[in-house]
Length: 533
Image (cartoon, rainbow, N blue to C red; front, side, top):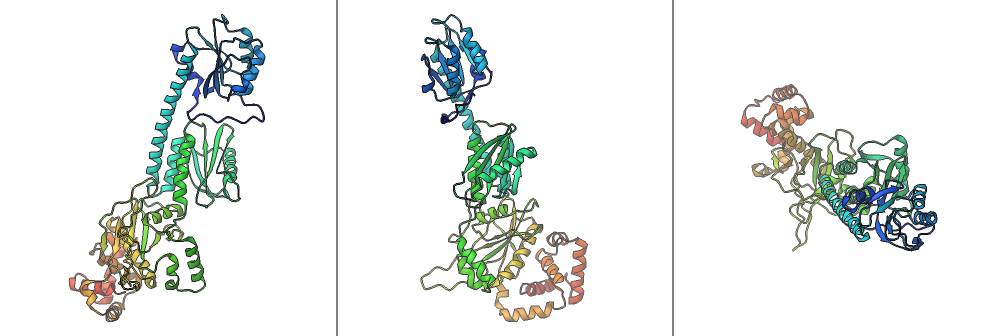
């Protein structure tokens, strides 16, 4: 399309996709024929005018229809249409002109304006109706495409790795490259075919334009580099993240699809607001300055009890900070530790909630359905210490973690803030138990039943005396082996060692303790003791 004159304000396009000129020419019933100018043009409007100079009344992008009633200077007439940004000229022959004037054909060829010959049997209103019908069809196709893209992006946002999944789906929908960048241009996640180095550099520079490092930064920006269309969108949440796109072509609806992805990524990447960010910061500072966990717990929104959760991706893939944050958001907490290094489990700290079942839907997905978790017959979490409540007050209800699609979880029993270190070890063992049994969630069960009848101090003293010959690795192996009912293979999976190593360790335990580990009474006695350590 010819460009508008310098200084002119580009018009706002209609809420319908542009129609390629070739689609209109393909309507054989109209009998239109291109006789001059380029073949490529996009039509935004249809307008009929017999004025000698229609420039003041054009918005740009029109197919202007005229019979040439006042046509006296074809070269000047075409020049004014080009200045106004007209997309094409349809010239109707008869009754004013028997044929299209040769001077008009030459002017259109010279100035690059497509010229269509309109036969006398085709009314201008028929052409206008055809264009509006094509626009309606294009709009319908666009809406269907956007709807399909929205559904695909929402499904991706509900995956265990929502941020990479959304970027992959966005790159697929747009047929290009989708990158999540920091304000300094560092790549967080990316999907799709990588553009050439020069286009990639231009995309990074464009992302810095919208990165919210200074007031007044635009929320989006576009550019073109060597035939590659570039776009950048600032994500909400104040984290300075930018969604950058590079595509070989720009189709109608691309901006809408990108907008859907921006909303989803903003929700996924934003910090969870369940606990006040200032409170979390104050808690961290106080602990660094020597405060105890019990002193800072109220700053995290609760005094407890707390549940420690260890989590790993079911497919074995590592979990980055954004993916781990999405897991925490789905569990209803912002207290997530995903920075322990490669191969380490994600740790989540879950406080009490007002509802018995804390299920929170991720953007574009449905809340996970409660499933019956397996209860690990092992662990040493102490009985939860309930915070003191006034008469008539309702004590905080412990959180009840539920399975999450794509994750394997191990959770401690609800624990007072003073025993979180022990609960962390319990959650690690619960996760190992869940992986060994292929259960989506294993929750440690607090000591109860007959074992609870023995005073804790006496039980702990008996356990220390009985297990004194065992080293920590041997005691851990024995605890895991007993919790898995003596299964060599499952114990090996849970501990990440060879099954022969398990056999050797259990045999060594029997020798040091001088007991027969095939005896159920012996196993029960040892299990009781291990539960106290």
